[in-house]
Amino acid sequence: MIKHFMILSSSYSSGTRIALHYIIDEQMNPEMLTAEVKTIKEACGETVSISTHYVETDSADWESVMEKDAFFEGVVRVDSLVGFVNLISEDRVLKGIDIAKYILSTRVCTHLELEKLVYMCYADYLCATHKKLFKDKIYAFRYGPVIESVYEEYKGMKDIEEGVAVDEHIMDGYAKMPARSRILFAEDGIEKIAHIDATLKCYMGLSAAELVNITHVVGGPWDSVDKDMPYAEISDDIIFEKHIKEVECIK
Image (cartoon, rainbow, N blue to C red; front, top):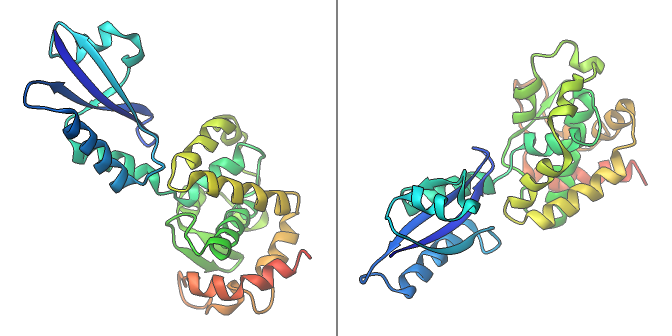
């Protein structure tokens, strides 16, 4: 019998489960496999979601594993530890669009509202934890803070500054659980989703005009950037120093 050892995880970017597959022979010992798991956790974080599995079949082919246990059907085999880590690591870092999709799974927003809500999630999290919620740059546009990936996704919409509603299909396309799971899978995912939910509880019921008043507050991060410069960036340092002005608007 051929002994198979698998380390399983999920790749949200490719929408599938992935497996690092080993054939156990006389040259491979349990310590070697434990070391592989340790390497993955060191590279991707201790909270990374992985599981280990052992199956015996009469063949070294991956297909024999799927035939032996239907649990592995649809799992994509990854050839190398580096490739496996790279796929997971890519998903462990959030982008602003991931937060936007989570918001859109709950309600339809205008583009203007969506940019403000994603920004407030970022600013609240940054100031509470001293860590980034997502990797995007945040720009100071005429109508307020704009998140790089969210703007890229929706910039083709007409009159977004006037509050044209996001198409209904967006809400249909994002069920809440997959959008939530995407955030939970990221590094510090439990912490991040808790902060996001707390921020949305504060701001989700506000109108576009009310959100604009908050992000445009005198002395706030957006107000402290030279908006005459194309794509002027609102840095983390500015947000950390000035976000309190925005928070004070809802007290």
